[in-house]
Amino acid sequence: MKSYYLAPERIRLCDSLKSPQEGVIICDEKLLALYPELFDKSLAIYPLKASEKTKSWESLAGIYEFLAKNKLRRSEIIQVLGGGITCDIAAFAAATFKRGCRLKLHPSTLLAMVDAALGGKSALNHLGHRNLIGSFYPAEAVIIYPEFLKSLPEMELRQGKAEMLKSYLLCNELSEVNLQAGSIPNAEQIMEYALYKMRLCAEDPYDKGIRRLLNFGHSYGHVYETLLDYRYKHGDAVVMGIYSEVEQSYRKGYLPEADYQRIIEELDKYPLPEGLIRDVQDLDKEMVTRCLAQDKKQGGMVPIATGFRKVEVI
Ligand SMILES: NC(=O)c1ccc[n+]([C@@H]2O[C@H](COP(=O)([O-])OP(=O)(O)OC[C@H]3O[C@@H](n4cnc5c(N)ncnc54)[C@H](O)[C@@H]3O)[C@@H](O)[C@H]2O)c1
Image 1 (cartoon, protein in one colour):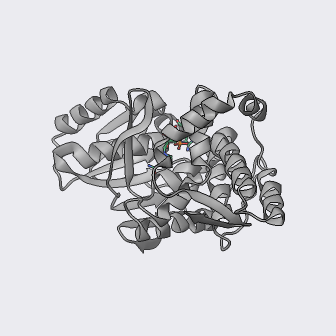
Image 2 (image 1 turned 90 degrees about the horizontal axis):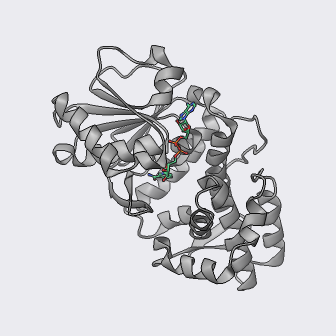
């Protein structure tokens, strides 16, 4: 097992799946069916259905009840296995149960390995808004098992690659991601991208400056997700958002023509789902502008592309 420490989290890379040995488990219910051998029957397990509806007060109450029933002490660990949804709500429960318990995350989707499980953000959806409520509560360890990706559906794998493509355009030190269907990033590349996110988070743990680079494509991306009633997945919407933000940077004169063309070439390698471009083009432009203004990430500094693989927060 390789271990990397970037305050405040420790990231571990594991070649083969290992069962958590202590504490209690909160787990995406799909993993229970897919990897029955992974669960030590002596540990209490709370299964969660991975849907945005799960990031709610009702599910949180269920988790608190489970933790209370199992008499979890603050010194004991909540082990979380799942994608971003499971990690987000379980981390919020860990942050708040008895004013904070120990937490280890075992992300099972590509998106969670390179993004959601890192950087300490926990979240609940509320009043129809995604991630309206949350806290910063970094896990003491994030354990990455690339083996989980073998069972991940192609569409979910693509959402992780979308966030990787975003990072690739942010930092010219990162290796290129193979965006073709069927290709799974190897352990080395997953760690490269996970550590890139962690570097930004270590520098700006509360998301007030440089970490906002990671919002590249997200202002427009959120608007498209919302106005299209969440018919498209987050990563796909973010890639559409990057197209729009790059276009804006170019029009406003921040981005030279040649760099603009190079970025578009890279974006064009991403296999967007059928219908998304047309649906975005059909959106009412005034509505998009109004919705953009409401986006919480509009407050303060925003990422602007100023070159090929060069983005600044301005
Ligand atoms: N906290 C953060 O910093 C942060 C960052 C980005 C995204 N997020 C959040 O992450 C969530 C999206 O995360 P996600 O894309 O990982 O989604 P997810 O947790 O819904 O997982 C996607 C799907 O894959 C299934 N799945 C999970 N692991 C699997 C595996 N190994 N094999 C087969 N199926 C598997 C799940 O059951 C689900 O159906 C959103 O709620 C978003 O808000 C949080």
